[in-house]
Length: 106
Image 1 (cartoon, rainbow, N blue to C red):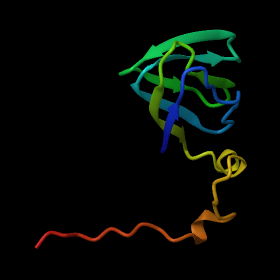
Image 2: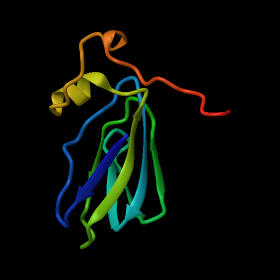
Image 3: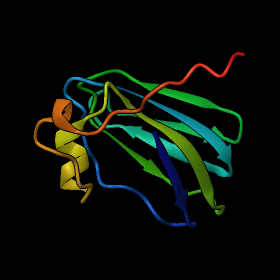
């Protein structure tokens, strides 16, 4: 899951998640998302949830004079895209440490 803060006038680079749906929850602000595949622009505001189907080229913009704060991201995780953005992700995630669940009931 990503936590993103954009300042007015900021936008992310157009991109596509070829095998992942993208869900973005807008926590604060107003802006727009460009659906570059369908050649449409959709405005959003705090409280909106944006769904981007797999394979749709898109870009989020803080272009309405306000900061934009959001959480969300591609599911399943788009590992090649995250690596491109600088995240340190093992080539073989199955060999990475995993979260362990402990039952805390008495």
